[in-house]
Image (cartoon, rainbow, N blue to C red; front, top):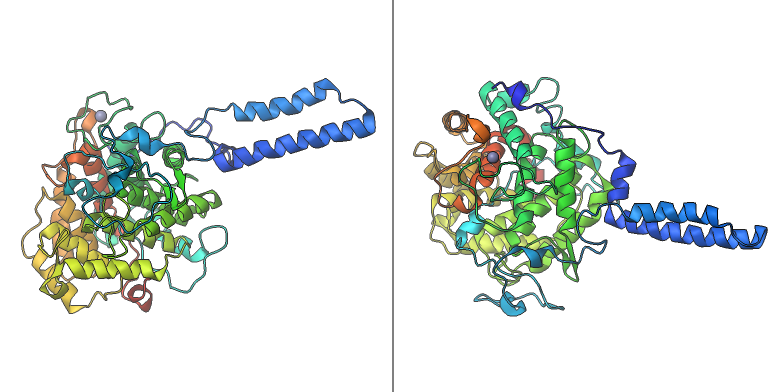
Length: 508
Ligand SMILES: [Zn+2]
């Protein structure tokens, strides 16, 4: 199967015009209807004043227009977005007071909180599915965002994914940073697999439900959060430069984004995209922020701001991290997702308050060992995956790539050859090595990259996907593994080569 075949675009029957996409927005649509009602009132008033009694025919036309718009198939909940995706998802809904867990609940809950923990068997592996996706760090602090959308700088920060990263000569620049022709072809096959496994409503599901797979692919996942699965599946498209604005996957990405927006739940504490776990909040926010940063689409500004506010208010004020539930004492994987979502939002022009970032540094201090060269999950009991995450988080919160602690930590992690099964560790480690410009990166990357390409599914419905015997990510199943593998193979153009500047050191 050639890359060209695998990358063949999804059906693009009549991509929506910009007007159509605006009209599909809940907020705009409800405002539009409101405007129509006011216009009708004005018309009636004018007719009564000027022409006497209004003519029914004209009125009917106006009303029909409004009603027709209102009857369009809904993307999900009503315009308020408050009707709850979250409540419908997890089979194991807990009572409201479940937010009070074993950990300190530091966030006041002004209303009954329908966020419920998923009592799936994952334990920490829930969060293990997620991990930070490296954002290009080229945004100089102090550059103000525009009032309505991503700043020009934000657009530049994401440019490596477009023209410079792939563009006219797909992969040329990427190959210069460590990709290969084969890995680029693998990316195209993987994106095609993801597109084939999108559900009709725009979502992706860890258990591969709702699409045409119908059991044809083995190793489905078990996690229930559709904001997490949809956000995770969107990221590789965005990472390769495909947005809801253009490109062969425009429709795919657009439907995914609108699905996420349909799951948004307005709360006094911000926009809840959790569906039972802050992991879902982090990854969905990241996907929306990426889309905003890449396109400057003003329709995404409000959702991103609301989602970021939810992240901020859900932080454990004492320990500085995040876990499954708002206010819960943190673990390093869920915390990393929130950090990267905040970072991406910053690049998209939406600044995070510094106390939130200070809290993350405090959390990292609490789980580090070896003076910061290694990290644990919720305690300093370190293992390779959590150490890789911790070191990457340190890069995002101010440590220089030349920092001795960072070097020492990465040296330890690359001492052994890449473990081809450890998709989760490798996902983080590849980002940290490249971001830190570690001397072992070229050799480590070559081996790991070729391992990944060789392990991609080649036959039947599974062609283009990945599955690994990795217990940390098993609950995410083939969907999560494919997304993580793709993001790893996209590391070459998700990153700008600019690193180590003052802008990086003071990233927040
Ligand atoms: Zn399938």
